[in-house]
Length: 522
Image 1 (tube, rainbow, N blue to C red):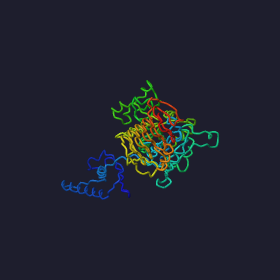
Image 2 (cartoon, rainbow, N blue to C red):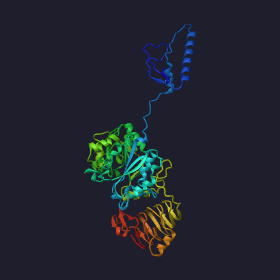
Image 3 (cartoon, one colour):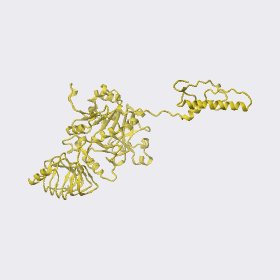
């Protein structure tokens, strides 16, 4: 018996006599957590041997031979060790936010896509940032290229990890830049190229503990524990793991689909297939954990654009294996699946790609449902944003199925199925229905409002007797009295930027800082 409380048994076959049931047992190293228990067992065994010898009137020499170890082992119920839990400090997240955001134009006319407001008081970048924080991941890079001023400002205000509250964590913006050499003269050519241009960051001293790299998009709406994702990645031994959604027939052709085997290994990809190609991508989604009924309803799996790579694999792919590939989704991932162990990870919860004006509009208005499919109200996993220190809203209006953000003034108006952003001002007899109002960056004082009205000008907000329907109103817009915005002719696409608005997918979009004069009709 070693000092650490371990008993090593080495018994030749046939040496154990008088201890029934021991032959054939599997003997192994046993650790005792209670030395007193072991001593009690030995004494009990000796008493039982003595009683047996007296009753038989003969001396029977029995060797205990520490056989009591098997009893103690049984009572200890030795278990196989659980898989080692992945540590968040060994993970770094990269949020891709540098795209031009053309499908979200004109909301991206003066801001990066991740900086677009959502839900009344948040920005799109707050979704992956909050998911990282709630998952314990505090090492984050954000790659930017287009219109990044407002995004940089928001990140500096909301996620200042330099205060020491996040240990050794950091949030750093990696803006597209030029470097020496011919190759260094180009801007980001795609998601993979953006990461490639900063590959040296993963080889410096600060990244010595990093084992896995999480690649995230800055324009999705969902709540996810990324460490569950990383844990599954490590337990499977995969080189690359792709988070995916089960999908039904109605939406499957809008996404890149994957074919998997019965172990969840990715075999092939198809980008937005239709017809016979779509049917060929159907898989048995019970492999990923869906019930038989769910699997029949959703026979396809779509990539979310959320990936985790082993660090060394990612660097190898970007620098040596595919040095000219520019995009993860259409180039790196499909090609890697043929050579590296690429696995699918099921995320069977709410997720929405906020990539178009229509999806942005629908996702925001869906927040007003009871109960909503996605909610910002989760005390355990909150969504973070910048502190604004705004007062509560003042409401003297009728509000139906709507969200009213803080710091707003609603006076004798009717708000139906709408989302009203911060610092919004809506005046008497205004009627908003199916409208997304992004709010304002500043207040105008009562004196300033009175002065503007006296001069026949329009203050920030919605004027009296104005009727608005199916509309997105960007920040700081000034909409006058007796205005009608209804798109009654049902126009789907129009560029009326000189007059302060666009129509996209049938939705009227009022431009940031523009003035819609009194009595104007759209």
